[in-house]
Image (tube, rainbow, N blue to C red; front, side, top):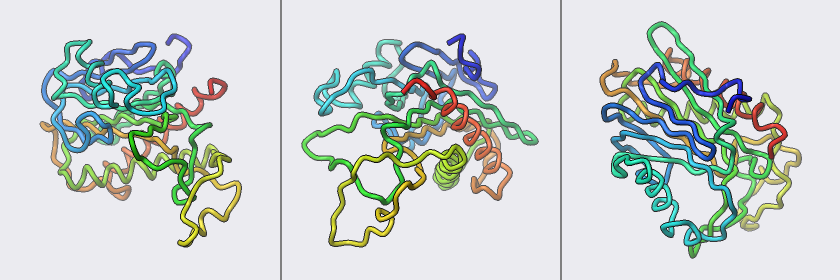
Amino acid sequence: MSNNPYTAPDELITGGHVTKECNSVTVLFDDIHYSLSSGQLNGGFHHTLGVRNQQLTYHIETEKDLPGGSVANYLAQEFEHIDVPVHFSTALLTSATPSLHAYTMVQESDTIVETIVTGGYKSTAHRAGTGYCYEEKDGEFHTPGTINILVFTNKALTDSAMVKAIMTITEAKTAALQDWKVESTKVIPKYNTQIDHSLAKETNTSATGTATDGIILTINTNGDVLTDAGSYSLFGDTLAKAVYLGVQRALENAIGTE
């Protein structure tokens, strides 16, 4: 952890206690927060006391190979080990190294956005719409590479604004990948030849993300309520800058480790 120039502080400015371990980064809150998560444990909109980015350190073929028999159960067990109520927790899975996460804090006026990002991309960088590598069926599992983004703010957002924030986060992530000149992997994708696949006809295409990215956005329900998180708004611009910088720093940390 000492070799990481972008390691997260022990306490977030927006509120939250950060625990950094070899295989995980966990943020715990003193009171209940509200989150929008793509994680399989309590994903979607959820009240939360803790969020986590958990590394999977071995390859599996199906979810049944995980402790607990599923991603959700595996992540739930990780929270149980640290005595955090599972029903007030959400988490993401990654194969990237959590100790090489990147922390950012961007402030504009009284708006603060903090991020903790992990970046693994070489084996799973992908351009959306250029084909798929597997079909989810009978528990088949695609081991994550993953750019996982944890976002924290001192503001409150309406549900619709939180969805808009996910869009802004994704746009910022893609911009960072494009500026980093990350290309989609050379894995030959599968696709239905009976529909148009004009995107798949290009070669050496820039990646828009990885095939297994995740986001957890956590807001402060006691903060000022905002209804817009688009990039024209002050909040959206601050959010985009924090995510962009976080992804770039995470990619920088990931060089030479994959």
